Image (tube, rainbow, N blue to C red; front, side, top):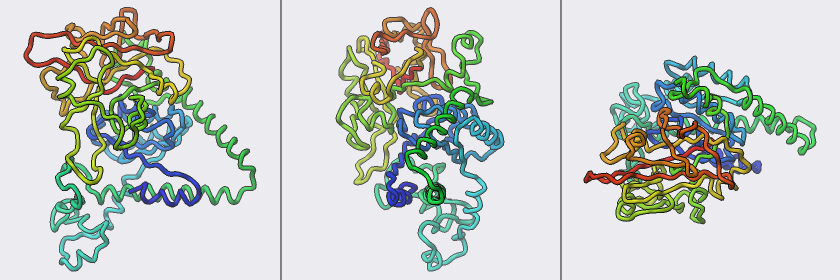
Length: 452
């Protein structure tokens, strides 16, 4: 909705507007998404939004890590918080202000504004059908009995657009309907258009050389970026897993907040997948990108080389004439029938996309988050390393422990947490699932590997 409203207006002044709806259902904003912002949203992102109110509560550190990583994004994006109102609003607002004082451009969508707009929406309760039909489409059946997208007459029944693919997934009671999404989308569109208009008016009033003005703005932006990168420490951002005294001397939280990363992620949607960077293929686009193979097919075969890119069949969309789902928790896969399998990070396409990089050698691995925290039989993850059911190496060096930091884990070897890159600046991550005597096949699903 936002892109549809904004795109022609930006085009009229020669600006190509690209709105990337890369939301992932059920995902927390950190650590994985926060540390993979450039891989998911693209190295060219100009604005990054946070809208994880349902999944991040009550862990404010996730929000702040996500905010902090936006401040180190190489394209210097602005940051917009959506739905930050709630019990910890004042704390969030304080951190936003501190981040802005240290060089990061921050905005938030006011919960009070949303409430004021919903208050003036006409209530369908008490209207006859003729009166309801006369209400504009975007607010018709929006509020009934003073409830948004609930109750009678018809608000609950008209919450989702049923014109196409009425059997599509995720029409859950807790998800907003199309009218709520339209409200938010149009609000953000108005915000962008107003800023564009005020910028044009300001430029018209000035007498300047365009090249000189652009250089001045770039220099100012770079100065703000360096301030945040060097002094952007925010309060209340302690990350679980970094509190143990044995870790703090070697891995300071500032590294997690500010060090450049390369995130090798299987998650979709992401620019890494859509642009063929992950798979180094010419298959590109929201529909035509390389999808990998199904888990059923993977379990029938075996691999003794590259770790396979795999998807669960149940994640894929039912047939529909339009695209209704792009959110897939795909993964790098190994099972006990495989030999040693591996991921090479960064690959050639990642090197070209991210440019020069001096890695520090800290490596974080993120396993697929199980639905409702219940993993199926056979799923192998962090504890299996100690039980010798899972073996891992980095450039031939044994990983002896996986230190869990919320939903991801840091790799450790006998001498610490930092691994040496090979002569090509790469890290070969090797994985082996030790064959078991159980009837259930043992496997592991890794969604992202993040190298600092």
